[in-house]
Length: 128
Image (cartoon, rainbow, N blue to C red):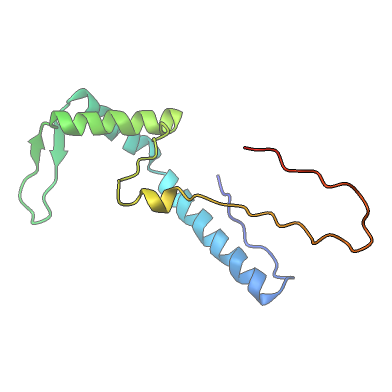
């Protein structure tokens, strides 16, 4: 599957620059998508608590490690997030930062002055 295809540049240089960036991002996402099955298998193994092989970079033999309960919970959360989307988080405000989130807006309405040739009756405002 190839999403990104080079296109002819018949547009301005500025637009072509944006198109080239998008093509580069699509190509990167295609490369990353090749590992989706392996990543899902890894998350599933960690979630189930299967021993995970740890390969050492210095040439020593690989070790086997059991994931902790925190690792298992994180793997389960990531699998659910990818399957159903992340749950909405409530917005929390600290006492000091609440002024930034909530602003009180006062609207003042000023009437134009009465026209000199206006002969209408005066209407008194109602008490609040």
